[in-house]
Amino acid sequence: MPKRMRAMGAAVLGGLLVSAACSSSSSNNGSAGAGGSAGDGASGTTNSGGHSGSTAHGGSGGKAGSSGKGGSGGSDVSQGGGGASAGTGGSSAGSGGEAGAVTVQCANPKCTSGLCFPDGTCVDCLSDDQCPSGQVCGSTNTCVTGCKDDNTSCASGVCADAHDCQSCIGDSECGAGNLCGDNRCAPACTADQQGTNAGCGTGLTCCGLHCIDAETDSQNCGACGSPCADGQFCGLTACAGGEAGAGGQAGTSACVACHDTTLANICALPKVAVVLDGQDGNQVPGRAMAAALAAQCTPAPTIREVSQTVPDALNPSNGRPVSGAHELLVAAGGSYYARLLGYVDAQKISPIYWHYDGVTTIEFRKNSNDEVVVTRQTTEDNTMHDFFVIQLMRDPTSGSLVLNAEGFWESGTVAAAYFFANGILPNLNTFDKSWYVYEWTDKDGDLAPDVDEMKLVSSGP
Image 1 (cartoon, rainbow, N blue to C red):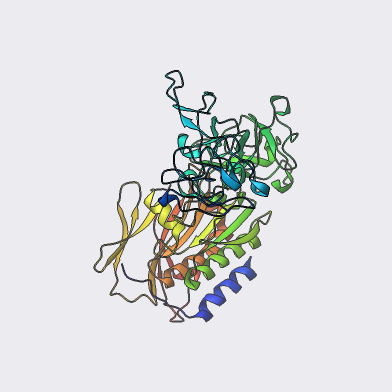
Image 2 (cartoon, rainbow, N blue to C red):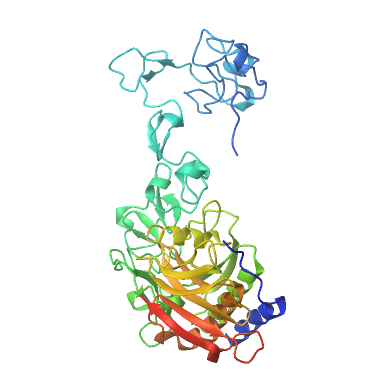
């Protein structure tokens, strides 16, 4: 895959931004409490509070009533010194926590889990690993809903406190007693609070026991039980009387509506996040697009920036968007650098994707059927001529919306951002498709894009 070349200097990129703005902790096994030290489990000996032997790790459970915190003994009472008597850190864990009960494998056939305490009391689990996916071992030694680890349990890549996933995308990513609303895990509201902000707080509405943002929730758009159709998203619209919908409250459907996922509706979201991939050739055009949205949309959205390397609007390991429907993610450039684009391309969420044959041919193709929209050769000049796509897409799982402007080369990405700010936004209601592919040819030789240098190649839903 060829590296996308720097076709334009910093002055051109900086000018684009200016013109757009003007125009518009974890614990370790074997660690003891305050008075313990790690033991040598492999040798069958143990220091106070350390490993209890070759097959048991004292203090690894971290839960009272299971393996305990601090220097609890192991499950095999015949090995090491941490079994029946937990040594210095076992029966008394000091400030590090309570001693855990010694557990044994149950021979009682009525104990279907095969796990119990020494008194014969059956339990469902003794550690998180003994629970199925999406569940953890709770305080009563039963499996309850919650994440176990960052990478396999949470779409965002972060399992936070109380076994809640950061930026959740569903109830299964929340710990016991919590539900996912507005991409956050929170205590459930009650049935008698339905349709109000009681139990949820300012800006959120109780719908079906979930605290949601009725201005952006596609299942409860404007009011509880008002879902949007497939391919639509929930956002602001003009209120009756011509006033903007920024002040609309949940339940006031005149200021909130379902919108088709097309460029014409790009101003319907109240927040914008520019996703930064570390490449100025992409970051500067992305910032220019966000500045244009802030200058030309009414009401103006709030703008922030997020790095693709930080768990926030997307999973930094695979680029999966998890911001939810309340925020538009702006990403300039393609999958070569941008992890977000790598994810939406691979998952066939983006309408158009960038393809390279490994030799000299590069193409824009439709993700729906791999049909080639436009093609060119890597050997051709790219400083004064390129193709670009501007597209809006919605991740059906998280509800996240992504606006992408991408050229074959950096020059095309710059031209795309310029045309978005100066060609599309001023005539927004005429752009009723989700994607547009243009050809840019520098007619006046200034190595910079102009609106009259753009030629529409193709567009689609």
